[in-house]
Figure 1: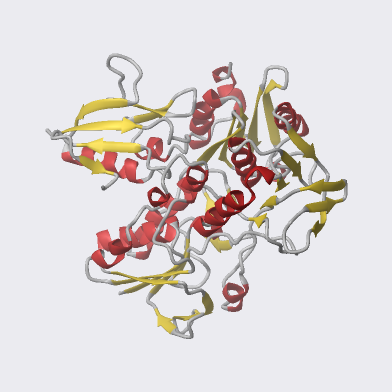
Figure 2: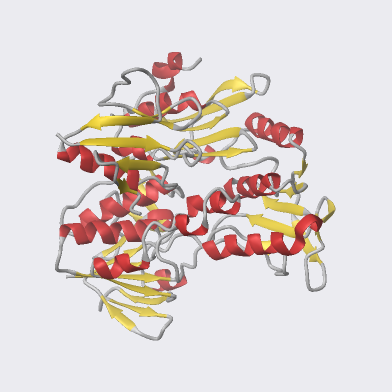
Length: 89
Length: 394
């Protein structure tokens, strides 16, 4: 299964929550209204704005969709080689 | 199949993108008033405050349209619609025929009567550039002022504070967001602004501007105030004339059912301009937030391409004014609520208003109480009453 690194930049995040609507198992807002990254609904090793996830192709597409839905482009997605998949550079 | 989309914002462009995903061969055209490829209005404040470079506001490159085989016509307004013969007349003098039409033209900022160099609006990238230009020109002599009591007013407050410019604010109502906030909640916001050195003037109606070639001040019903930049945030007022003339039903927005279909066959609507049937809250809503616009763009593309889909999302928006978090969820119109439950208080530094209708939660305004957002959103989605969820609140 592909692995991706998902990172939320809390300086850009404004708590619009479109990511939560599309991929609630990967994004949830914390008390500061910023999105923490979850691993299939869980938070192994606690709260974080950045995580490696093992995902199916469908799940990966959905996480990318969530990143695309962010009005401030605060979600960054990298593949296993470290290449930035989104936002497109 | 010819899809014609009027509006190059997030609703229209998302619809175009989704239509192309679903149909590789159809004709898709976007008619856009602005000359820029899709950018995020939500990122304009970040750009103004220097948090991101200008290029980062763009969500699509100008090459994206051609790559997707989407015809992008920029700098043209729709001026005429013939729903019977299915064509749109543009301000460029051309006529565009369609099979399916999407009206996603968004909101036009309501402007004050007078114009003078120093008056600023905050909707487009051009507006943002102009604001920065004024700041550069005026430098340390800048005297900031805001006219308005809603989201845009909050943005201007944040801009001026970021640049350490003194702020005078006048708004027409008793307090901010008079259509949504109870007086107590309004007081909480007022206290916060005053504590942060905003010179605040409620119940203040603009009468005239002062200044010869450039703004020097403004006069309202409560007094005269110095200003070199006056940020205006008094709502939106789209031009519905060409839409009404075509026989499309218009209220405060373009009326639509839950499938985002208007009363004219093959004419749809999405985004800020849509006044749509919302099965979740049981009322027609008009929502001006990002989540609503983008999701409606995606859903209406489904309906337009033959998969008639009901739009059912509880959308919300969050902002921050000088450190005070403000969240609007769902249906927050005071006049349409049967009951408004209040949690918290001014003393506690945070208030949440829970709006109920027909015995269930339909919306929430949260000031300084972020953690109420999830239980309220769930309650709306699950059609629960306030009583059922009241234990979720601290």
